[in-house]
Length: 195
Image (cartoon, rainbow, N blue to C red; front, top):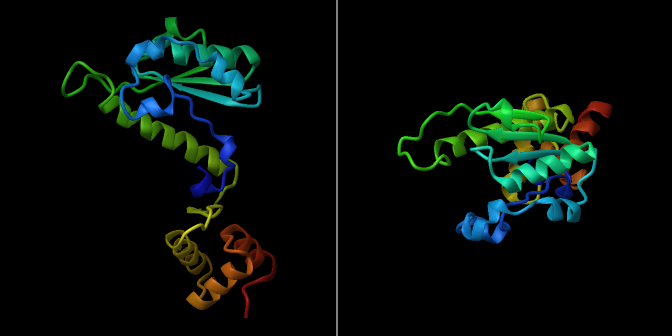
């Protein structure tokens, strides 16, 4: 979110049952999904201006339910992403996004196919949010951080595409704005391209 859309790094916080270190190994060790997320929500200073999105394919992970219940209690938005619709099981949150992915090719786990669809759903949510926050210009991500050569080249090509600018002029504009694509676009829109 930060690199792609220039969104503040502290604007999106990820909490995982057992912590980020466990996520690469076994997130179900020692029943971490049965623990409450409320202490971590307090440490993260979640407040009523926030939106909390919980992911539990079954919808039953207490860690996720407790995070969403806390968010709802303090007046923050609370959304659960789960596999099936279950109206009897969502009093702890405001909205439920049901994926309806059906059974896995290999039964016994719900995190393969449902996991892929969950990632796509998160992409839809984040992309829609960034569009509504005007972090894009047309179909281009223009508020990205140009922190490496690849992103700088992308910014140059976006300027060339949007304004039909030659390569040298695009690079000069980026350099004049400290490699800020968004500022370069504002400069063009307000005064026209450099001569």
